[in-house]
Amino acid sequence: MRVPGRGHSDETMASLLTLSDVLATGHHAAVCADVTPGSVIAVVGDGAVGLSGVLAAARLGADQVIALSRNPVRQKLAREFGATDIVETLGEEATEAVKELTNGVGADAVMECVGTGQAMLTAISIARPGSMVGYVGVPHGVELPIGDMFFRNVGVRGGSSPVRAYIPQLLPDVLAGRITPGRVFDFTTDLDGIAEAYAADGRPPRDQVPAAGRDGLKMSWTRDELDRIDAALELTLASSRGDGTHRRPVTMWVVRRGEDIYVRSVNGRESSWFRGAQTCHEARIRAGGIEKDVSIVETDEYAHEIDAAYQTKYGRRYPTVVPSIIAPQARAATLELIAREEETYA
Image (cartoon, rainbow, N blue to C red; front, side, top):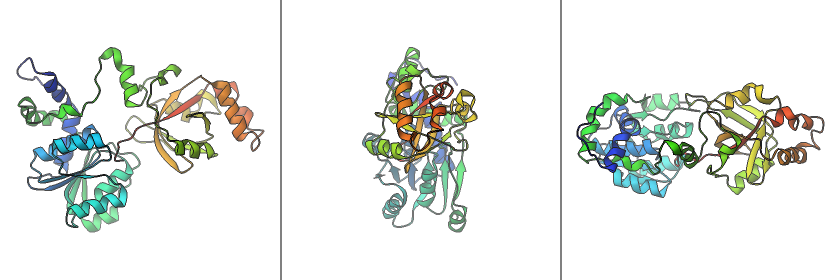
């Protein structure tokens, strides 16, 4: 779609860019949730889409916009976009906080902008009876509480945003400066800086990533997470598909080297789970009571140190099995698991 005029400012150009995705997606959540003037709205998720959802709700005339966020920087932007209240808690505490802000009733409309099971359950729990949850977060690990929805008459509606259909409605407000959604962007680069952009986002590119590609990736394992994963004998890994869903979890051994976590495929690179992990280079892992989204980076570094870690952790318990995990075939299928920074709500 052609944009009228020329010589637009950098701020306007950034806001125009949001029309291609995040602004229109946040608006779609508002439309699906039936946001109306004077209504009470709750937005689950504080990423670019969630913040755009806050902006969309305010633009459509909501009287009260409750943003669920634990990130101080995003909380500030949410307020500037129109949020009247911030809820920093999770789960049942978030539900109670929203109900306290709505006289025990819940929100007239809820926008779910994360896609996790917890986010969807929270969105449904804070919706008042008879209301709608508009969801635009790509669902992964979501199971709807149909019984609760049935008796409370709460519905869900959403999916991929028909961006082009919304641009004529949103473009005039962007050009007039009535809304400035481009402020959701906090990092810019050019085509030569694509690797730097992925590093800033805390994940590798979706094509094949060389071992050196992990340099600069954001590390966010906490000491507790490292200790608990290291103490666990097994880790389950569910790799991500291109549509945002996860494959069936696979159980494997896991070792720690310093501040890093590694797994290997005992059957080498042709193992089905190893090949699946190369699709998006992302997965959901569980070990030692820790459940976390991770980026997956193939590596050939520190092979002997990782061998030693397997020997130390599993050698006495499984002396006949360890040789297979330090054999050349398995060594060539070594993956580093890098903790990803999730949506601060989810």
